[in-house]
Image 1 (cartoon, rainbow, N blue to C red):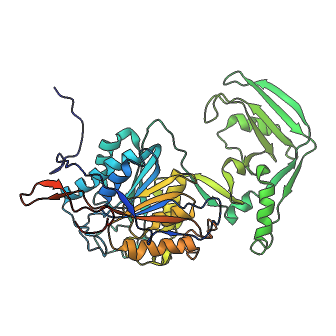
Image 2 (cartoon, rainbow, N blue to C red):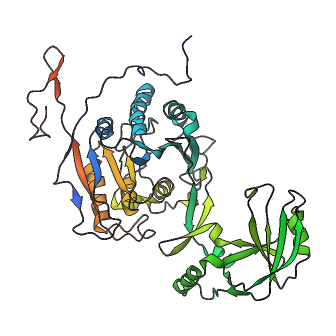
Image 3 (cartoon, helix red, strand yellow):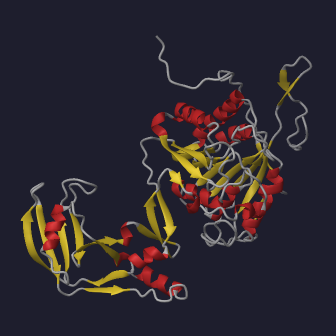
Length: 469
């Protein structure tokens, strides 16, 4: 009996007409570059492709196999609603086939450590999950993210359950590669208030107690410090002194801490703290028998009968600013991704289709490093390219609609000229620079004759690639 696999089927799925590879032809008049280099992170060899994205992806297949680090696509949701720029009411089977054929090529373009993000609503997300399991494999699934696009305003409209969310499916190319997914945000004042103390001097330490752990028999050593100093960074007039305070925090970053009370259920640490002088700094060296640091020798600091938490364990320095890391959940809240000015981002109007630059920034940060390639084959208003450009990533965008010229090109020109200071520009200190090349797909080398057979198009002229065939 033939081996069978679990898959989603639809009308026409088995019909796979061969695609004729097309050539990408640059139109220098529409390509755009800054007159000079602004920084070492400037990216000039980005691609904006005007044309059918299936043919464009096929054209990219030979040049970029296994090279794209992040694919983000925001395809038509197939809801049947009237969109200004898309025919979004495709019959279900046609939509599934449209997406399947493109995703097969997108997988080939992804690097081994690459990630795919596909943005949908609840009309098709469940079918898409099954399709992606088939193409990528169920073990490549990372997360189904619920993205809160708006608050629950307008209750009573659209049914008894108000729809406030969209969905993002995330997959990886290779299940053997782990991705460290963390969310970096600038330090808020409430965090600064907790971590405004730093250990400026420890001096020499003295062993005051040593015993064997009851859990694993390994040595536990308790030391105390007589010549130590803890300083506090003043937060007085914080708003007026923010730059000065930030400089102090950066200088003391490795030693910034806060203290936590010992949990009642932790009898081991409770016993240690009960014997400590509250005015003395202590360290304890031991090897845990369980938990995150199992079988690793660690050193814990205690003061005032409380345990140190170091800021450096959950934060980092980026662009001369301390950012705090937190593990992301699969629910991205409205307040975490500002959308107040989304209508004006990029200086273009794109009702109900534009995604916030902050959302794209989070996805690109998770998936890539500077210089990596980001691809969006449903370019829309150009948000993906604009954000990737500002973040020092290379990008490729494909768009078939006329808004490739009316929206994307003007938006990217403002980004390159440094005129676009909305969206994430201030967060990344965007000054402009870089550029992109504009491409069209060369016309087909084939045409149908009078008997409806495909034949070589003898009228094809490579010197006039945009002439109709």
